[in-house]
Image (cartoon, rainbow, N blue to C red; front, side):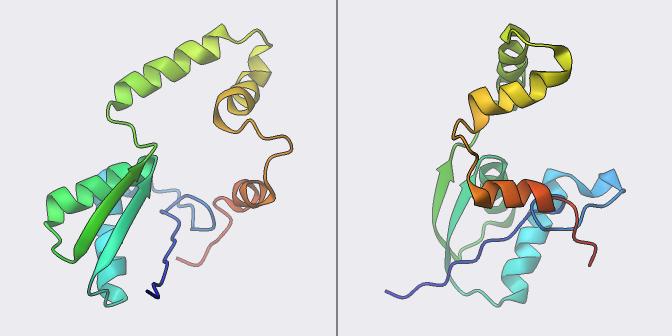
Length: 135
């Protein structure tokens, strides 16, 4: 079956705009953005995949919207306890044997992307983060 794949960057991520106003960076605002996107594109039925924080948004969208258009939900690497994730990340950072100014980079290379060199698509995403100003 032919299917259209829609991939979008949440506000402040990837090639999306990065705003100075932090009140728009909330789960409720992001869920509303997803609903607006689906409605704007006139999506009748869809399968929803949420990765990491996107999984939290996907789950919240279905919980809040009761969207009957969604035929299935896939959650990939989605945290179920954000406080635990935060605490464990901090513990792993503190366990690193490196200078403080390098700690975040070493953490990223040790626990988030262990592919050397980092895949070009990921390098590009980091390089473009917050540079789009068209909102």
